Amino acid sequence: MFAVTELNQRDKKVQGLCRILFMIMTGLLILPVVLILATLIYKGGSIISADFLFSEPTDGMTAGGIFPALYGTIWLVAVALLISVPLGVAAAVYLSEYAGDNWFTRVINLAIINLAGVPSIVHALFGVGAFVLFFGLGTSILAASLTLAIMTLPVVIVATRESLQAVPHAFREACWNMGATRWQTIRRVVLPNAVSGILTGVILEVSRTTGETAPIMFTGAAFFLPFLPESVFDQTMALSLHLYVVATQVPGVPDELPYGVALVLIAIVLIMNSLSIAFRMWLRGRKKW
Amino acid sequence: MVAGQKKVVASAPVVAVGTAGSVKLEVKDLAIAYGHQTILSGVTLSVREHEIFGIIGPANAGKTSFIKALNRMDMFTSSMRVDGKILFNGRDIHSLRNVYALRSRIGVVFPLPVGLPLSVYDNVALAPRLAGIKSKEELNVIVERCLTRAALWDEVKDRLDSLGSLLSGGQQQRLTIARALSQDPELLMLDEFSIAVDPVTTMRIEDVLKELKQEVTIILVTNLVQQARRLADRTAFFLEGRCVEVGVTEDLFTGEVQDTRTRDYVEGRFG
Image (cartoon, each protein chain N blue to C red):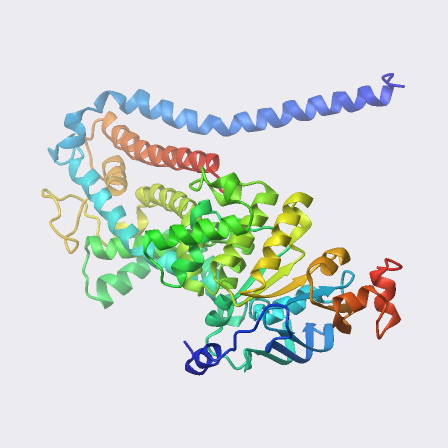
Protein backbone atom coordinates (compact mmCIF):
# COMPACT_ATOMS: atom_id res chain seq x y z
CA MET A 1 0.00 0.00 0.00
CA PHE A 2 2.82 2.38 0.85
CA ALA A 3 5.21 1.11 -1.82
CA VAL A 4 7.23 3.84 -3.53
CA THR A 5 6.21 4.29 -7.15
CA GLU A 6 8.24 5.86 -9.91
CA LEU A 7 5.97 8.91 -9.75
CA ASN A 8 6.69 9.34 -6.06
CA GLN A 9 10.41 9.26 -6.72
CA ARG A 10 10.17 11.88 -9.43
CA ASP A 11 8.06 14.15 -7.23
CA LYS A 12 10.60 13.77 -4.48
CA LYS A 13 13.46 14.70 -6.79
CA VAL A 14 11.66 17.80 -8.10
CA GLN A 15 10.79 18.85 -4.58
CA GLY A 16 14.42 18.47 -3.51
CA LEU A 17 15.62 20.57 -6.45
CA CYS A 18 13.12 23.34 -5.70
CA ARG A 19 14.19 23.43 -2.11
CA ILE A 20 17.86 23.84 -3.02
CA LEU A 21 17.10 26.44 -5.69
CA PHE A 22 15.07 28.59 -3.30
CA MET A 23 17.72 28.21 -0.63
CA ILE A 24 20.40 29.52 -2.98
CA MET A 25 18.19 32.46 -3.96
CA THR A 26 17.70 33.31 -0.31
CA GLY A 27 21.41 32.99 0.32
CA LEU A 28 22.10 35.46 -2.49
CA LEU A 29 20.04 38.05 -0.64
CA ILE A 30 22.48 38.10 2.25
CA LEU A 31 25.44 38.54 -0.07
CA PRO A 32 25.17 42.31 -0.75
CA VAL A 33 24.68 43.07 2.93
CA VAL A 34 27.68 40.99 3.91
CA LEU A 35 29.83 42.44 1.13
CA ILE A 36 28.93 46.04 1.94
CA LEU A 37 29.57 45.59 5.63
CA ALA A 38 32.82 43.68 5.05
CA THR A 39 34.16 46.32 2.66
CA LEU A 40 33.25 49.16 4.99
CA ILE A 41 34.80 47.49 8.02
CA TYR A 42 37.89 46.44 6.07
CA LYS A 43 38.51 49.86 4.55
CA GLY A 44 37.09 52.21 7.15
CA GLY A 45 37.16 50.26 10.39
CA SER A 46 40.63 51.49 11.30
CA ILE A 47 39.53 55.13 11.47
CA ILE A 48 36.67 54.58 13.91
CA SER A 49 37.53 55.79 17.38
CA ALA A 50 35.96 57.90 20.08
CA ASP A 51 38.05 60.76 18.77
CA PHE A 52 36.65 60.30 15.23
CA LEU A 53 33.06 60.27 16.52
CA PHE A 54 33.42 63.23 18.87
CA SER A 55 35.70 65.74 17.18
CA GLU A 56 35.26 68.23 14.36
CA PRO A 57 36.55 67.84 10.84
CA THR A 58 39.83 69.69 10.27
CA ASP A 59 42.17 70.54 7.40
CA GLY A 60 39.43 71.25 4.89
CA MET A 61 37.55 68.09 5.92
CA THR A 62 40.49 65.84 5.03
CA ALA A 63 41.15 64.99 8.66
CA GLY A 64 39.51 65.10 12.07
CA GLY A 65 36.17 63.65 13.08
CA ILE A 66 32.50 63.79 12.22
CA PHE A 67 30.85 65.09 15.37
CA PRO A 68 28.96 68.06 13.83
CA ALA A 69 27.49 65.76 11.19
CA LEU A 70 26.50 63.08 13.69
CA TYR A 71 24.99 65.71 15.97
CA GLY A 72 23.14 67.32 13.04
CA THR A 73 21.71 64.03 11.84
CA ILE A 74 20.28 63.32 15.29
CA TRP A 75 18.70 66.78 15.32
CA LEU A 76 17.22 66.40 11.85
CA VAL A 77 15.75 62.98 12.57
CA ALA A 78 14.39 63.98 15.97
CA VAL A 79 12.64 67.10 14.69
CA ALA A 80 11.29 65.24 11.67
CA LEU A 81 9.82 62.59 14.01
CA LEU A 82 8.29 65.21 16.28
CA ILE A 83 6.42 66.51 13.25
CA SER A 84 5.54 63.36 11.32
CA VAL A 85 4.56 61.00 14.15
CA PRO A 86 1.74 63.06 15.73
CA LEU A 87 0.49 64.10 12.30
CA GLY A 88 0.69 60.61 10.81
CA VAL A 89 -0.82 58.84 13.81
CA ALA A 90 -3.69 61.32 13.98
CA ALA A 91 -4.39 60.91 10.27
CA ALA A 92 -4.25 57.12 10.53
CA VAL A 93 -6.58 57.07 13.54
CA TYR A 94 -9.03 59.21 11.63
CA LEU A 95 -8.84 57.06 8.50
CA SER A 96 -9.08 53.78 10.37
CA GLU A 97 -11.50 54.61 13.18
CA TYR A 98 -13.67 57.52 12.11
CA ALA A 99 -13.85 57.87 8.37
CA GLY A 100 -16.23 55.75 6.37
CA ASP A 101 -15.51 54.43 2.93
CA ASN A 102 -16.42 57.38 0.74
CA TRP A 103 -14.90 59.47 -2.03
CA PHE A 104 -13.11 61.69 0.46
CA THR A 105 -11.19 58.87 2.16
CA ARG A 106 -10.49 57.27 -1.20
CA VAL A 107 -8.90 60.51 -2.41
CA ILE A 108 -6.87 60.69 0.80
CA ASN A 109 -5.70 57.10 0.38
CA LEU A 110 -4.72 57.81 -3.18
CA ALA A 111 -2.79 60.87 -2.02
CA ILE A 112 -0.93 58.80 0.57
CA ILE A 113 0.06 56.17 -1.96
CA ASN A 114 1.24 58.84 -4.37
CA LEU A 115 3.10 60.71 -1.67
CA ALA A 116 4.97 57.50 -0.89
CA GLY A 117 5.92 57.17 -4.53
CA VAL A 118 7.33 60.68 -4.98
CA PRO A 119 11.13 60.58 -5.49
CA SER A 120 13.10 62.17 -2.68
CA ILE A 121 14.68 64.79 -4.96
CA VAL A 122 11.20 66.05 -5.77
CA HIS A 123 10.48 66.29 -2.06
CA ALA A 124 13.70 68.28 -1.79
CA LEU A 125 12.59 70.79 -4.40
CA PHE A 126 9.18 71.02 -2.79
CA GLY A 127 10.91 71.68 0.52
CA VAL A 128 12.94 74.50 -1.00
CA GLY A 129 9.88 76.06 -2.57
CA ALA A 130 7.52 75.66 0.37
CA PHE A 131 9.55 75.82 3.56
CA VAL A 132 12.77 77.61 2.65
CA LEU A 133 11.27 80.26 0.40
CA PHE A 134 7.50 80.53 0.84
CA PHE A 135 7.37 80.14 4.62
CA GLY A 136 10.67 81.97 4.88
CA LEU A 137 12.32 79.43 7.15
CA GLY A 138 15.54 79.71 5.16
CA THR A 139 17.92 76.79 4.97
CA SER A 140 17.50 75.46 8.47
CA ILE A 141 17.00 72.31 10.50
CA LEU A 142 13.30 73.09 10.65
CA ALA A 143 12.93 73.35 6.87
CA ALA A 144 14.95 70.17 6.32
CA SER A 145 13.06 68.26 9.01
CA LEU A 146 9.71 69.38 7.64
CA THR A 147 10.77 68.07 4.25
CA LEU A 148 11.86 64.77 5.78
CA ALA A 149 8.62 64.61 7.76
CA ILE A 150 6.48 65.00 4.67
CA MET A 151 8.50 62.35 2.94
CA THR A 152 8.07 59.84 5.76
CA LEU A 153 4.46 60.67 6.55
CA PRO A 154 3.01 57.96 4.28
CA VAL A 155 5.11 55.32 6.05
CA VAL A 156 3.84 56.40 9.45
CA ILE A 157 0.24 56.54 8.27
CA VAL A 158 0.31 53.14 6.62
CA ALA A 159 2.11 51.45 9.52
CA THR A 160 -0.27 52.99 12.04
CA ARG A 161 -3.37 52.20 10.07
CA GLU A 162 -2.31 48.60 9.67
CA SER A 163 -1.62 48.11 13.34
CA LEU A 164 -4.95 49.74 14.20
CA GLN A 165 -6.76 47.45 11.84
CA ALA A 166 -5.00 44.43 13.32
CA VAL A 167 -7.04 45.03 16.48
CA PRO A 168 -10.13 42.83 16.00
CA HIS A 169 -13.34 44.67 15.21
CA ALA A 170 -15.23 42.69 17.85
CA PHE A 171 -13.33 44.57 20.56
CA ARG A 172 -14.61 47.87 19.25
CA GLU A 173 -18.21 46.69 19.02
CA ALA A 174 -18.06 45.25 22.52
CA CYS A 175 -16.90 48.63 23.75
CA TRP A 176 -19.45 50.63 21.77
CA ASN A 177 -22.19 48.37 23.07
CA MET A 178 -21.36 49.48 26.58
CA GLY A 179 -22.05 53.04 25.57
CA ALA A 180 -18.44 54.04 24.96
CA THR A 181 -17.85 56.77 22.41
CA ARG A 182 -15.49 56.22 19.52
CA TRP A 183 -12.75 58.13 21.28
CA GLN A 184 -13.17 56.25 24.57
CA THR A 185 -12.93 53.01 22.62
CA ILE A 186 -9.83 54.17 20.78
CA ARG A 187 -8.12 55.39 23.93
CA ARG A 188 -8.91 52.46 26.19
CA VAL A 189 -8.87 49.49 23.86
CA VAL A 190 -7.63 50.17 20.34
CA LEU A 191 -4.56 52.38 20.80
CA PRO A 192 -3.05 50.46 23.74
CA ASN A 193 -3.10 47.37 21.58
CA ALA A 194 -1.80 49.05 18.45
CA VAL A 195 0.93 51.16 20.00
CA SER A 196 3.50 48.40 19.57
CA GLY A 197 2.96 48.19 15.83
CA ILE A 198 3.03 51.97 15.54
CA LEU A 199 6.36 52.13 17.35
CA THR A 200 7.83 49.47 15.09
CA GLY A 201 6.84 51.54 12.09
CA VAL A 202 8.34 54.65 13.61
CA ILE A 203 11.67 52.98 14.29
CA LEU A 204 11.85 51.75 10.70
CA GLU A 205 11.11 55.25 9.57
CA VAL A 206 13.96 56.60 11.69
CA SER A 207 16.42 54.36 9.92
CA ARG A 208 15.18 55.53 6.56
CA THR A 209 15.27 59.21 7.47
CA THR A 210 18.81 58.90 8.79
CA GLY A 211 20.19 57.98 5.40
CA GLU A 212 18.29 60.44 3.23
CA THR A 213 20.48 62.99 1.48
CA ALA A 214 18.52 64.66 -1.28
CA PRO A 215 15.71 66.16 0.82
CA ILE A 216 18.11 67.87 3.21
CA MET A 217 20.89 69.07 0.92
CA PHE A 218 18.97 72.09 -0.37
CA THR A 219 16.85 72.72 2.70
CA GLY A 220 19.09 72.69 5.74
CA ALA A 221 22.21 70.60 5.56
CA ALA A 222 25.45 72.48 5.14
CA PHE A 223 28.59 71.55 3.25
CA PHE A 224 30.77 72.50 6.17
CA LEU A 225 30.01 74.31 9.41
CA PRO A 226 32.67 74.90 12.00
CA PHE A 227 30.09 75.15 14.81
CA LEU A 228 27.11 73.16 16.11
CA PRO A 229 23.54 74.36 15.47
CA GLU A 230 22.00 76.17 18.42
CA SER A 231 18.36 76.13 17.39
CA VAL A 232 16.10 74.63 14.71
CA PHE A 233 16.56 77.78 12.67
CA ASP A 234 20.26 77.12 12.17
CA GLN A 235 21.82 75.13 9.40
CA THR A 236 23.62 71.94 10.32
CA MET A 237 25.92 69.34 8.93
CA ALA A 238 24.48 65.85 8.40
CA LEU A 239 26.12 62.45 8.09
CA SER A 240 24.58 61.50 4.77
CA LEU A 241 25.54 64.75 3.08
CA HIS A 242 28.95 64.68 4.74
CA LEU A 243 29.56 61.27 3.20
CA TYR A 244 28.63 62.60 -0.23
CA VAL A 245 30.91 65.59 0.26
CA VAL A 246 34.01 63.75 1.46
CA ALA A 247 33.55 61.02 -1.12
CA THR A 248 33.15 63.24 -4.16
CA GLN A 249 33.56 66.95 -3.53
CA VAL A 250 36.74 67.43 -1.53
CA PRO A 251 40.17 66.66 -2.98
CA GLY A 252 42.85 64.97 -0.93
CA VAL A 253 40.64 63.04 1.45
CA PRO A 254 42.34 59.91 2.78
CA ASP A 255 40.69 56.71 1.58
CA GLU A 256 39.52 55.45 4.95
CA LEU A 257 37.62 58.65 5.86
CA PRO A 258 34.55 58.23 3.58
CA TYR A 259 34.45 54.53 4.44
CA GLY A 260 34.49 55.43 8.12
CA VAL A 261 31.60 57.88 7.66
CA ALA A 262 29.62 55.30 5.71
CA LEU A 263 30.28 52.73 8.42
CA VAL A 264 28.90 55.03 11.11
CA LEU A 265 25.84 55.82 9.00
CA ILE A 266 25.09 52.20 8.25
CA ALA A 267 25.73 51.23 11.87
CA ILE A 268 23.05 53.68 13.02
CA VAL A 269 20.59 52.25 10.51
CA LEU A 270 21.40 48.64 11.40
CA ILE A 271 21.13 49.31 15.11
CA MET A 272 17.73 50.95 14.56
CA ASN A 273 16.52 48.04 12.45
CA SER A 274 17.71 45.49 14.97
CA LEU A 275 15.90 47.37 17.70
CA SER A 276 12.71 47.29 15.69
CA ILE A 277 13.05 43.57 15.01
CA ALA A 278 13.78 42.81 18.66
CA PHE A 279 10.85 44.95 19.68
CA ARG A 280 8.52 43.17 17.31
CA MET A 281 9.64 39.77 18.55
CA TRP A 282 9.11 40.84 22.13
CA LEU A 283 5.62 42.06 21.26
CA ARG A 284 4.72 38.91 19.42
CA GLY A 285 5.61 37.06 22.59
CA ARG A 286 2.96 38.94 24.53
CA LYS A 287 0.19 38.93 21.94
CA LYS A 288 -3.01 39.61 23.71
CA TRP A 289 -5.48 37.56 21.76
CA MET B 1 -27.54 63.39 28.62
CA VAL B 2 -30.93 63.93 27.11
CA ALA B 3 -33.03 65.75 29.64
CA GLY B 4 -36.37 64.19 28.75
CA GLN B 5 -34.99 60.70 28.87
CA LYS B 6 -33.86 61.00 32.44
CA LYS B 7 -37.29 62.09 33.52
CA VAL B 8 -38.90 59.06 31.92
CA VAL B 9 -36.50 56.72 33.67
CA ALA B 10 -37.10 58.33 37.02
CA SER B 11 -40.83 57.93 36.73
CA ALA B 12 -40.67 54.28 35.64
CA PRO B 13 -42.78 52.41 38.16
CA VAL B 14 -41.28 49.64 40.22
CA VAL B 15 -43.26 46.49 39.70
CA ALA B 16 -43.47 43.34 41.75
CA VAL B 17 -41.80 40.25 40.34
CA GLY B 18 -43.78 38.00 38.07
CA THR B 19 -46.75 40.24 37.63
CA ALA B 20 -47.42 41.85 34.33
CA GLY B 21 -45.37 45.03 34.56
CA SER B 22 -45.49 48.20 32.61
CA VAL B 23 -44.03 48.25 29.15
CA LYS B 24 -40.26 48.59 29.04
CA LEU B 25 -39.78 48.20 25.36
CA GLU B 26 -42.22 48.57 22.57
CA VAL B 27 -41.54 47.53 19.00
CA LYS B 28 -43.94 48.64 16.28
CA ASP B 29 -43.88 47.28 12.75
CA LEU B 30 -40.13 46.81 12.79
CA ALA B 31 -38.36 45.93 9.56
CA ILE B 32 -34.68 45.28 9.13
CA ALA B 33 -32.85 45.07 5.82
CA TYR B 34 -29.24 44.63 4.75
CA GLY B 35 -28.91 46.41 1.45
CA HIS B 36 -31.88 45.20 -0.54
CA GLN B 37 -32.34 42.00 1.43
CA THR B 38 -35.04 42.17 4.04
CA ILE B 39 -34.14 40.10 7.07
CA LEU B 40 -37.04 40.85 9.33
CA SER B 41 -40.35 42.61 8.83
CA GLY B 42 -43.65 43.40 10.48
CA VAL B 43 -42.50 42.76 14.04
CA THR B 44 -44.78 44.28 16.65
CA LEU B 45 -44.34 43.27 20.24
CA SER B 46 -43.71 44.70 23.67
CA VAL B 47 -41.44 43.63 26.49
CA ARG B 48 -42.63 44.30 30.02
CA GLU B 49 -40.60 45.53 32.90
CA HIS B 50 -38.99 42.76 34.98
CA GLU B 51 -39.85 39.87 32.74
CA ILE B 52 -37.66 37.46 30.90
CA PHE B 53 -38.73 37.69 27.31
CA GLY B 54 -37.65 34.68 25.28
CA ILE B 55 -37.11 34.68 21.54
CA ILE B 56 -36.88 31.31 19.84
CA GLY B 57 -36.64 30.35 16.21
CA PRO B 58 -34.39 28.58 13.74
CA ALA B 59 -31.33 30.13 12.12
CA ASN B 60 -31.94 33.04 9.75
CA ALA B 61 -35.13 34.00 11.54
CA GLY B 62 -33.75 37.49 12.22
CA LYS B 63 -33.29 37.09 15.98
CA THR B 64 -29.80 38.55 16.17
CA SER B 65 -30.64 41.44 13.85
CA PHE B 66 -33.59 42.19 16.11
CA ILE B 67 -31.25 42.44 19.12
CA LYS B 68 -28.88 44.64 17.18
CA ALA B 69 -31.62 47.05 16.21
CA LEU B 70 -32.63 47.50 19.85
CA ASN B 71 -29.14 48.67 20.74
CA ARG B 72 -28.80 50.90 17.69
CA MET B 73 -26.02 48.67 16.41
CA ASP B 74 -27.32 49.37 12.94
CA MET B 75 -25.09 52.43 13.19
CA PHE B 76 -22.03 50.16 12.99
CA THR B 77 -23.05 48.50 9.74
CA SER B 78 -23.57 50.88 6.90
CA SER B 79 -25.75 48.48 4.90
CA MET B 80 -28.12 47.75 7.82
CA ARG B 81 -31.40 49.66 7.66
CA VAL B 82 -34.03 49.70 10.37
CA ASP B 83 -37.60 50.86 9.76
CA GLY B 84 -40.47 51.05 12.19
CA LYS B 85 -40.57 52.26 15.76
CA ILE B 86 -38.68 51.10 18.82
CA LEU B 87 -39.69 52.73 22.08
CA PHE B 88 -37.42 52.24 25.09
CA ASN B 89 -38.96 53.64 28.27
CA GLY B 90 -41.47 55.26 25.97
CA ARG B 91 -38.84 57.11 23.95
CA ASP B 92 -38.29 56.51 20.27
CA ILE B 93 -34.66 55.36 20.15
CA HIS B 94 -34.23 56.63 16.61
CA SER B 95 -34.90 60.18 17.72
CA LEU B 96 -32.42 59.96 20.59
CA ARG B 97 -29.42 62.13 20.14
CA ASN B 98 -27.47 60.48 22.90
CA VAL B 99 -27.19 56.86 21.76
CA TYR B 100 -24.35 56.34 24.24
CA ALA B 101 -26.77 56.79 27.12
CA LEU B 102 -29.11 54.28 25.48
CA ARG B 103 -26.37 51.70 24.99
CA SER B 104 -25.07 52.13 28.51
CA ARG B 105 -28.53 51.17 29.80
CA ILE B 106 -28.66 48.05 27.68
CA GLY B 107 -26.28 45.17 28.31
CA VAL B 108 -25.67 42.82 25.40
CA VAL B 109 -24.10 39.37 25.31
CA PHE B 110 -23.44 37.72 21.98
CA PRO B 111 -22.86 34.03 21.21
CA LEU B 112 -19.13 34.42 20.68
CA PRO B 113 -17.34 35.66 23.79
CA VAL B 114 -15.31 38.83 23.53
CA GLY B 115 -12.75 39.18 26.28
CA LEU B 116 -11.24 42.60 25.76
CA PRO B 117 -7.43 42.63 25.77
CA LEU B 118 -7.46 44.18 29.21
CA SER B 119 -7.02 42.53 32.58
CA VAL B 120 -10.00 40.61 33.96
CA TYR B 121 -10.50 43.42 36.46
CA ASP B 122 -10.35 46.17 33.84
CA ASN B 123 -12.77 44.26 31.60
CA VAL B 124 -15.44 44.46 34.27
CA ALA B 125 -14.43 47.89 35.54
CA LEU B 126 -14.55 49.44 32.06
CA ALA B 127 -18.24 50.30 31.96
CA PRO B 128 -18.32 51.77 35.50
CA ARG B 129 -15.23 53.80 34.64
CA LEU B 130 -16.88 55.06 31.47
CA ALA B 131 -19.80 56.06 33.67
CA GLY B 132 -17.40 58.16 35.71
CA ILE B 133 -16.82 55.96 38.76
CA LYS B 134 -13.26 56.47 39.97
CA SER B 135 -13.18 55.28 43.55
CA LYS B 136 -11.15 52.09 43.88
CA GLU B 137 -13.37 50.65 46.63
CA GLU B 138 -16.51 51.23 44.62
CA LEU B 139 -14.98 49.57 41.56
CA ASN B 140 -13.78 46.62 43.66
CA VAL B 141 -17.31 46.04 44.90
CA ILE B 142 -18.78 46.20 41.40
CA VAL B 143 -16.16 43.88 39.92
CA GLU B 144 -16.63 41.27 42.62
CA ARG B 145 -20.42 41.45 42.45
CA CYS B 146 -20.58 41.15 38.67
CA LEU B 147 -18.03 38.35 38.45
CA THR B 148 -19.83 36.46 41.20
CA ARG B 149 -23.15 36.80 39.42
CA ALA B 150 -21.61 35.58 36.20
CA ALA B 151 -20.34 32.52 38.10
CA LEU B 152 -16.75 33.42 37.37
CA TRP B 153 -15.46 34.97 40.60
CA ASP B 154 -14.15 31.76 42.19
CA GLU B 155 -12.13 30.91 39.11
CA VAL B 156 -10.49 34.29 38.58
CA LYS B 157 -10.36 35.96 41.98
CA ASP B 158 -6.66 35.13 42.32
CA ARG B 159 -5.72 36.37 38.89
CA LEU B 160 -7.72 39.51 38.28
CA ASP B 161 -4.61 41.02 36.69
CA SER B 162 -4.26 38.42 33.95
CA LEU B 163 -5.58 39.19 30.48
CA GLY B 164 -9.28 38.65 29.90
CA SER B 165 -8.64 37.68 26.30
CA LEU B 166 -6.49 34.74 27.41
CA LEU B 167 -9.19 33.05 29.50
CA SER B 168 -10.82 29.92 28.12
CA GLY B 169 -13.81 30.35 25.80
CA GLY B 170 -16.36 29.52 28.49
CA GLN B 171 -14.67 31.83 30.98
CA GLN B 172 -14.54 34.64 28.44
CA GLN B 173 -18.26 34.28 27.86
CA ARG B 174 -18.92 34.60 31.58
CA LEU B 175 -16.57 37.56 31.60
CA THR B 176 -18.67 39.06 28.81
CA ILE B 177 -21.79 38.52 30.92
CA ALA B 178 -20.07 40.08 33.93
CA ARG B 179 -19.18 43.06 31.77
CA ALA B 180 -22.74 43.45 30.59
CA LEU B 181 -23.89 43.34 34.23
CA SER B 182 -21.27 45.90 35.21
CA GLN B 183 -23.16 48.46 33.14
CA ASP B 184 -25.94 48.10 35.70
CA PRO B 185 -28.30 47.82 32.74
CA GLU B 186 -32.05 48.32 32.72
CA LEU B 187 -32.32 45.83 29.90
CA LEU B 188 -30.12 42.81 29.44
CA MET B 189 -30.09 41.11 26.06
CA LEU B 190 -28.53 37.67 25.76
CA ASP B 191 -28.08 36.15 22.34
CA GLU B 192 -27.52 32.40 22.71
CA PHE B 193 -25.19 33.04 25.59
CA SER B 194 -24.82 29.37 26.48
CA ILE B 195 -23.24 28.17 23.23
CA ALA B 196 -19.71 28.54 24.57
CA VAL B 197 -20.53 27.60 28.16
CA ASP B 198 -20.64 24.15 29.72
CA PRO B 199 -24.04 22.82 30.93
CA VAL B 200 -23.27 23.14 34.66
CA THR B 201 -22.22 26.75 34.32
CA THR B 202 -25.20 27.40 32.08
CA MET B 203 -27.47 26.23 34.88
CA ARG B 204 -25.69 28.51 37.35
CA ILE B 205 -26.10 31.49 35.02
CA GLU B 206 -29.74 30.61 34.44
CA ASP B 207 -30.28 30.73 38.20
CA VAL B 208 -28.63 34.14 38.27
CA LEU B 209 -30.90 35.35 35.48
CA LYS B 210 -33.98 34.28 37.46
CA GLU B 211 -32.72 36.35 40.37
CA LEU B 212 -31.75 39.31 38.19
CA LYS B 213 -35.28 39.52 36.89
CA GLN B 214 -36.16 41.46 40.02
CA GLU B 215 -33.93 44.33 38.92
CA VAL B 216 -33.53 44.01 35.19
CA THR B 217 -35.65 43.30 32.15
CA ILE B 218 -34.16 40.45 30.17
CA ILE B 219 -34.47 39.48 26.52
CA LEU B 220 -33.20 35.97 25.97
CA VAL B 221 -32.59 34.76 22.44
CA THR B 222 -32.00 31.05 22.48
CA ASN B 223 -31.73 28.04 20.25
CA LEU B 224 -32.55 25.78 23.13
CA VAL B 225 -36.32 25.77 23.37
CA GLN B 226 -36.07 24.12 26.77
CA GLN B 227 -33.99 27.02 28.00
CA ALA B 228 -36.77 29.37 26.95
CA ARG B 229 -39.26 27.15 28.78
CA ARG B 230 -37.14 27.15 31.94
CA LEU B 231 -36.58 30.89 32.02
CA ALA B 232 -38.91 32.96 29.91
CA ASP B 233 -42.17 34.40 31.17
CA ARG B 234 -43.31 35.11 27.64
CA THR B 235 -41.79 33.92 24.42
CA ALA B 236 -41.81 35.10 20.85
CA PHE B 237 -41.36 32.69 17.96
CA PHE B 238 -39.48 34.09 14.98
CA LEU B 239 -39.49 32.30 11.66
CA GLU B 240 -38.08 33.36 8.32
CA GLY B 241 -38.02 37.05 9.08
CA ARG B 242 -41.46 37.22 10.72
CA CYS B 243 -42.58 37.15 14.29
CA VAL B 244 -45.05 34.26 14.14
CA GLU B 245 -46.46 34.73 17.60
CA VAL B 246 -45.87 36.01 21.09
CA GLY B 247 -47.36 34.19 24.03
CA VAL B 248 -47.02 33.13 27.62
CA THR B 249 -44.20 30.59 27.47
CA GLU B 250 -46.11 27.79 29.15
CA ASP B 251 -48.96 28.14 26.62
CA LEU B 252 -46.54 27.71 23.76
CA PHE B 253 -45.27 24.50 25.28
CA THR B 254 -48.65 23.06 26.17
CA GLY B 255 -49.96 23.47 22.68
CA GLU B 256 -52.12 26.52 23.25
CA VAL B 257 -50.76 28.26 20.21
CA GLN B 258 -52.25 30.53 17.59
CA ASP B 259 -50.13 29.09 14.83
CA THR B 260 -49.43 25.41 14.34
CA ARG B 261 -45.90 26.16 13.16
CA THR B 262 -45.06 27.25 16.69
CA ARG B 263 -46.15 23.93 18.09
CA ASP B 264 -44.22 22.08 15.41
CA TYR B 265 -41.05 24.00 16.22
CA VAL B 266 -41.35 23.68 19.95
CA GLU B 267 -41.94 19.95 19.65
CA GLY B 268 -38.93 19.60 17.38
CA ARG B 269 -40.77 18.65 14.22
CA PHE B 270 -38.77 21.07 12.11
CA GLY B 271 -36.02 23.64 12.41
